[in-house]
Length: 505
Ligand code: FAD
Image (cartoon, rainbow, N blue to C red; front, side, top):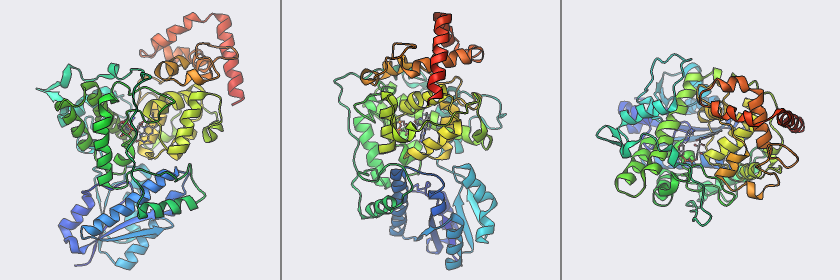
């Protein structure tokens, strides 16, 4: 029997890879030959955060080494393109068939479906993607694409199906959703835990040197300390369970100058490349609740993020692609301001958040949504420009998660398919949820005037500009009603200041 090839994509590194399992079952381990390709064209498609590249390439190389230790023959090729790497591999190894798992992203999957077989010239078996639970159970199959599906309903269906946090069929603690208990502001004296650090080994160090030598990318590789193996990623999860999960729920929406990660898990970089799997995180957190180690608002909050939001986002991506990239409901056309690339702005919140994105490639959810996207939505920044910035800056960034989060949730550009209302807020919200405003030169209380925070006059200007549309949205009615406190003079002042600010952006 000839060799059976398995092509493993860089963001598909689960311990039990379905393509590997299928190939082994069919051909026997000794006849399986695994390929991982590091494509130069893909790496240079646009700038990416250097830490993300180190994470990805180091995790791929460690994964290859682990497979070799498990007795597989593995080739790790650096090639100009995926196609070139695949051709080289097929020429050298002469396999007679190829197994691979469906990519999470649209272009990758199209390549597998429409080009791969002709590139390798042998039969290709494309296995379903197992990195998402919605691949096992779709709560809304055959859904008409225009019909809106609310995340909360999707999430409840998923909880029921996967039997998560249920007691006799009812939600644990009595409520499906403890969102109201996820919004406490951070006490000054609370201790904020540091993340575990994973010292780079020689493999990671080599990747760091390679990535640092390239002039293409965001941030620096120095200080890289992320997990790059499954074992380390599991240790990162254990650390979260022990030190952060109990407070995760209460302070989930809090923001502070003092700390970048607060009680967040920072597990998305590992989940998104398969080092961790969603169900094991959900079950681990649910067990912490059963054991009395973490309160329900934290455990349900964490479960909602993964079984609810993460699955829903992936589901929305596939439902809306390829049209999603063209969506621009608010007809936003302004280019992204330069300060997004330099953090050179007087707005204290934006400066801190952008500095963290450039430095570490991470912001927690509320900073991404209510600082960065909120600003871009209020300022009318062109959605795909925002999307490219996000893709470039985060260590957990992949198109399937970025597009629906940025265009759908963050900018409400998809006609409300992903979020039932635009997430917009004035400086009052930013002040309520964090301590950025204290150290800012702008005044969060003023609606307009020399010291007024741009978040405020842009917010009121947005309400005025889109009053009619917003009034029709039942979830935003109350915000629009706030306009009654603005007399004609104030309306004129807000509009004028917003216009001037936007012209100078
Ligand atoms: P935690 O707060 O600890 O949450 C736990 C897990 O829930 C996360 O690890 C993540 O896997 C999942 N999760 C929570 N919310 C979402 C969501 N809306 N979509 C998908 N998964 C979610 N997430 C990414 O993984 N990659 C991205 O590139 C990304 N870009 C985003 C851009 C915008 C504009 C917004 C609003 C959200 C984005 N998110 C993205 C979702 C979310 O902000 C991050 O998953 C989260 O901040 C990662 O940090 P964490 O692991 O500490 O999360």
